[in-house]
Picture 1: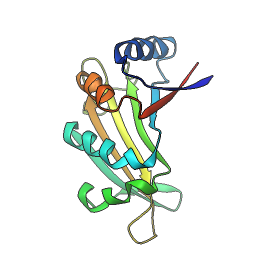
Picture 2 (picture 1 turned 180 degrees about the horizontal axis):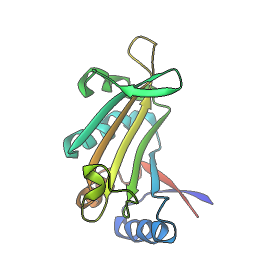
Picture 3 (picture 1 turned 135 degrees about the vertical axis):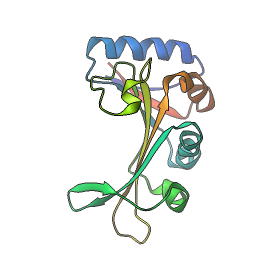
Picture 4 (picture 1 turned 30 degrees about the vertical axis):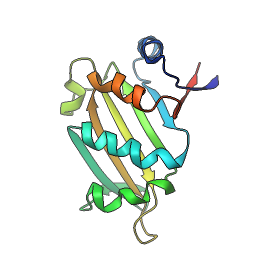
Length: 148
């Protein structure tokens, strides 16, 4: 395996991501932001494009729904442990509405420090697959993935 930075040839990457997941539908490809200074802009794009968004807090060993809103916590994005997206062309389960979208879905995610040093915050944003080229063009050279 090797780490590959996404360049401006987004069509080649999309073909790779489809083929990668076709080999094992339970493993969508994960792409991560390469530098925390891009985290907030990346998540703001997800916020703009998403149809579903969830904010959760880590409470002990489990995440739970939070009453906090995106704008209340996004300024902590540079503290993220992980920030990126999972590209799921072939959703296995059809439980949630986004898992039923034609062509699959993109799930933006971030795990970052809490507001007062307390519970870690997670944000999940579900975006339709039709937005993938725009996302990849906007963040060319700012994302990476593991190529097998």
